[in-house]
Length: 177
Ligand SMILES: [Zn+2]
Ligand SMILES: [Zn+2]
Image (cartoon, rainbow, N blue to C red; front, side, top):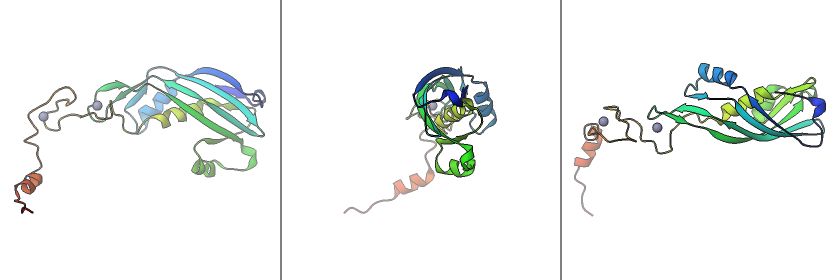
């Protein structure tokens, strides 16, 4: 989604659009985060305005994201809304990308006649994904011994997989105080 710089004025404007999921899924498939894929386009609603030479964007992203739990390997729906904001400064001012990036992830540069929001939106979507997807905070995962999903059932392995070092500590007789 591209916006012409001359259309960005001091009066805030609203825009809603769908950012295609293909490019994000390509990055997810190739990068270190393989546990996620988008099931449809990202729905974006954004409000933008200019203050001097800086362009301000803020809005909300809505994604339908399929994920694979890092503990129990089940598919789950990690859909979510996420607010975002970023500020664009003209490249001509003389910053370079590296100094900006080190200072603030929400800061970027623009040049030319238009701003392409797509790469910024894609970056926000990727940043929003936790590095370790969990189907729920207290997911109990799989039994390392028999592979039973411990969210759904129990197994009889617990005794067998006790750490022998723990057993040794337990068998110590502690003096009474
Ligand atoms: Zn899980
Ligand atoms: Zn087991």
